[in-house]
Every structure is written in structure tokens, then in C-alpha cells.
Length: 296
Figure 1 (cartoon, helix red, strand yellow):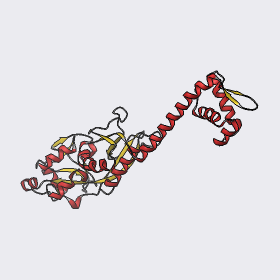
Figure 2 (cartoon, helix red, strand yellow; figure 1 turned 180 degrees about the vertical axis):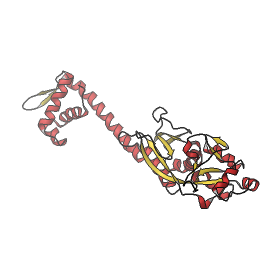
Figure 3 (tube, helix red, strand yellow; figure 1 turned 90 degrees about the vertical axis):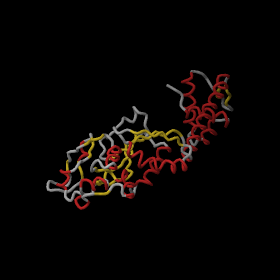
Figure 4 (tube, one colour; figure 1 turned 45 degrees about the horizontal axis):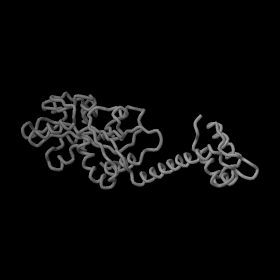
């Protein structure tokens, strides 16, 4: 059985205060409790640390040697606790964040400068992946996931949501015409995802319901690739607002079939493993994202 910090503290307090009763008062414990802690410590070490008499306590040679080490251990623990307090006041350390490339590029990257100005001691490490990763295997602190969550072993924090829109470039519409009804899409070049298949369900109201399963003429694994293809006039695409807000503001992409579009908002979550309290660097990053993405 290993020595505990409580036993070390009891030993040092008894030596410093000169008696078990005085140490007990300082530690807000009973004298019998402090005495038992000392006895356990001596039993574990298999030595006598203090000679107890009716009038005073006296350190043995082994006690004097152990006292020096006990002081060092307790000082190191106090120093570590103090450092943690400072880190919570001024979060610091490396923070590894993973997100799909489009979200990283269009949602996270624009916030990095402001985040670093507020928390200069946090070292951001940004990773992009269009596949769902294992956080432990990839040594990732936070992963941003868009859409319904499936992994129940993770803790998740909602960061906001984004609407989906069916879009095309003015050049494409000029060359191929603007679809007036959902049925008109069968005459157009549709851009879709290779996977997952649910991303090729467009939020369009039609005779069969409120979701249209498209047959893409061209597919890509990344939403950013599809965005670039749409900007080049290759076809019609359905993408989230976080990726296309600037394009729509400039008129580089325009929404089509607006009246037939069903309002569908993709949830955005930060997922992470948590055993106890979150590290301050993780908490402040999640707070910062929520602050800027919550109204997206």
C-alpha cells in the first residue's frame, strides 16, 4: 500500500506544530485521526518516524531524513496546483482540433485570429478530415461534426446549426436555364457526395415528400470540391450556409427553387472525451465557437 498525501501532510504538520493535537486543530481533524494517519505511515514505511512521549514528540534519524523528502513532495504538489490555477485563469497548452475541410476553412479559420488574440498561450493545432476519426487514436482534443451524432461514447456540445440551400452559379443558369419546379432538376447536372448517402437527400418539397433523393451527374467526397465545381458552372449543388454565405453575398452562387425548399438545419456539435472537468483550453475554445457560430 502506497503512502498518501494526507499521511504526509499529517506527519509534516505534527512536526511543525509540535503536537498531534495542534496539528489536528490546524487540519480541522480529530487528534485520533491524525494519530492513525501517522501510525499508517510508519507501518507502510516500516520505520519509526516520531518517538512519542507524554511530554513531547521527537524525530528519529529516519524521521528527519523522511521529513525532508515529504516537504519536497508536498511543495511539488502545491506548485502543480498553483500552476493549474494559473492555467485556468490564463488557459495554455496545445489544443488539437479536427473538422471537415469545408468547415475548417469557412467557419474555423476566420475565427482563429480573434481566438489567438484572446488566448495567446493556447497553441492551436488544426487538422482537416472528411472522414469521422477516432479521437483517441488521432490524439485529438475536439472534433467538429455536422449532422446527427452516432457515437454515444463521446460527450457533445451543440455549437449551432446551418441551413441547407440548393444553389447554382449565374453562369450555369444562363447556359442551362433556371429550374422552375423540382421535376425540372431531372434535366440538369446535379452535383452530389460520394458518401454518406444521406447528403444526397435534398430538402425539396415534391409529390413524394419533403426530401428528394437525387441522382448526381458528378460526385465528390468533399463539400469544398462541390462548391468549387458549382462556382465553375458545372452544375447545381446543395450545401450548408457556412460554406456559401460569402458566395451568395457576392452573387457568385444563387439559390434556386426557393419556394420548394424545406427548412432543414444541420446541427453542429463539438465532440470530445471527458472523464472529469474539461481542461480550460478546451472550454474556452468551445465557448468561443459557440459565441460566434450560435447565430449562424
